[in-house]
Length: 135
Image (cartoon, one colour):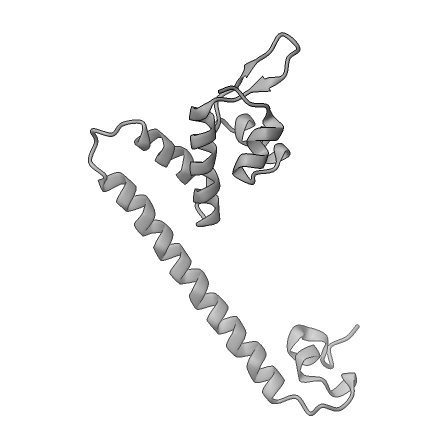
């Protein structure tokens, strides 16, 4: 099976410019080309792009995906390094959740204290920094 970049995009749900980007940063190998210079992808590239897409959906950074791909090509190795990458990612997610919860609480406090009057008296605008400090 050798498919075009458009067909690869359709099958994986990854846009063509994103596929080209992944090629450019080395996550996808440079594909074979036809005599007419069209890219042609096989089953290996399809599987690899699905791996990359799913990794991105889970929020992994490009560097981590690169490392996970390298590790996936060495099936005899211990999965300790994979676990460490995933653990670090979970810790980052937990930190982001903590920041989002704090942001939500701050915005909710502003809404709860809102007088429902005019914009001039609006607590949300005041908290955002346009209170009495306008220049």
